[in-house]
Amino acid sequence: MHPAAIEALVRLRADARKAGFDLRVASGFRSFERQAAIWNAKAAGLRPVLDAGERPIDVRGLDDTALVFAILRWSALPGASRHHWGTDMDVVDAERLEPGQPVDLRVADADEGGVFAPLHRWLDERIASGRAHGFFRPYTGAGCAVAPEPWHLSFAPLAWECQRGFDPTALAAAHRRAALALHAAIDGAREQILQRYFEVPARLYAAALGGWDGAGRAEHA
Ligand SMILES: [Zn+2]
Image (cartoon, rainbow, N blue to C red; front, side, top):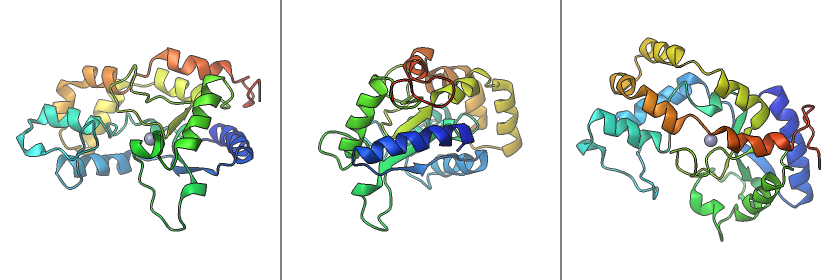
């Protein structure tokens, strides 16, 4: 994680601790190479591609463009993942995990009755009231075509700079250099992909930025 995001995370963790949660990062920074390995494995059918209900799709009947969009539902395009920025993370309540239990991020665990539901209801309330130290959820199922990922938090002040400064030309060059799977199909749909799966509307950042005073402290902590 970026040092500024860590500072905010430490504060969020301390608040969570007081509320009875052990908020931990299951996945933070992810490199282009790691994301490309995930992407290539899904494109090659070596990792399951899931539908909106988290069920595996039979990808054999899909053409390249349809496969690109199927993968994008749950996996970011390498180079366009928010996990590359050091500002974004997937969180769990370690209090609710058995020792050594592998972390599997599923919507059902965050929904009512799920193992992480209490943590997420607490986060809902903190985010809505501008008391989440600059963190917000970019993937709510609204405003962006990425499937809802309640566990995914983003540090708005820095993430906004990263999104604003994003360079689609550099992305295309990186895909060519890496000989990324399906890169011809990606090229053909690049603008649409970025619009639907990358650009998180500014209004989603706005609430989180309102609760952040620029020094890493929430105004109403
Ligand atoms: Zn994530």
